[in-house]
Every structure is written in structure tokens, then in C-alpha cells.
Image (cartoon, rainbow, N blue to C red):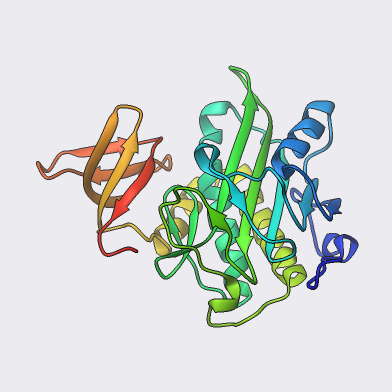
Length: 264
């Protein structure tokens, strides 16, 4: 048993839809995202949460390995079934990042967000989010939001952009994983419910208040090559606005931050 255990039933008792549980927990799995995606394809309902003390095949964005020691992180995934067309679902990574950040803040852990969904304590990475969506032309079938948060220690990362940090290093000091999980899931549910009801503007505004990149010189890897400029916040659809040296503004819906001025 992990030294900082999670009681899934106690967490589920605090939850309301759309992230209403049940909460499933295991000592070790391959990947919570992969296992929950399989359950989604079998028809599991929205709101199921799957977590583990350890993952043997955890990953971050672009397939990077995420290797946390058993019991030192929160590693979990949430199943959603957004009632919207695919073009609206592109905001999901922003919704998830804001919801998780708001839950952490409730536990005394103030984080900022580096587009699209890296969670930073100062300029060090506390956690990340990996969203996977299955949709056809007209509707979203399911979405899995995978979340990894460093709680007691920091993971071994391969080629990560940010130096890792943990909750225990923050201003609140150590926080039990169960309390963090309950707060994060509750806040994520509230943000998701508001988004379902049409409040995209609210989540964009909340992201702006926690934006770690706005006004900073950035380099980004995109499918069309690397670009650089000054980050200028998000547009109404959640795309990153970048102003180049020539004054022209570009709108990025995909890509990855590869460099930030003054960040280590």
C-alpha cells in the first residue's frame, strides 16, 4: 500500500456530475488513459475516474515517458462525453487545465498554465494533462482527460521542456493525495459543467489570469516548423496568439512550447 493512500469511495462521495464517479483505483496499471479509453469504447458512462499509485507505461504529450515513483504522484484519468460537435471540443485542454489549476489553488497550491496545459509552480512543471478525443464529423463520442501531478517527488522525464517540481515544494507544503484528488475533480467538474452550458468565455478569462506565457518571448514547435515571437494570450477558441518580430500575429491551434525567456 502507498504511504499516502487514496480511498476512492471517500473521494467519490464529494463528486457531482459531469465528473461524478465512480472512482476506480489500482496499485499499478500500464496507463490510466489507455485503460479508460478501452472502457469508453465499451460504453462506460461519463464521469468515471481511473487512477493508480504507479503506471508502467505512463506518457505525456508527444509520447514522452512519465515515470513517477509509486505513491509519489497523482496519476488519473477522467472519462467525459461532451455534448457538442468536434469543433467546439477543441477547447477541452484549456477547460481541463483551468479546472485542475483551480482545484490545486483550493489546496493552497497556486499554479500557472503554460499553453496548452502544463501546470507550473513558478517556472517548474508541477503536472501535465493529456487529452484524447474520439469523434466523427458531427459529434464527440468520448474524451479521456489524463492528469499527472507531482505530489511528494518529481518524475523522471525524457526530453521535457520544464524542470519538474512537486506539491510538497510549494507554499502549502505536503498535501495528502486524497485531498488533492477530491479538490481537483470537483473543480474540474464545475468548469466542465460551465463549458457544457456554453461558458467558453469564462474559461478563456480564467486561463488568462493564470497564463504563464503572456508577454514573454517564446519558441514553439509546430507542424510547419519552429516559430518565435511574443505570446499574447488566447483567442476566443483557445488558440495561442503569437506576435512575431515583424508585428504579424499568428494563431496556433497545435504545437508545443520549446523555449521561454527566463525559464529554466
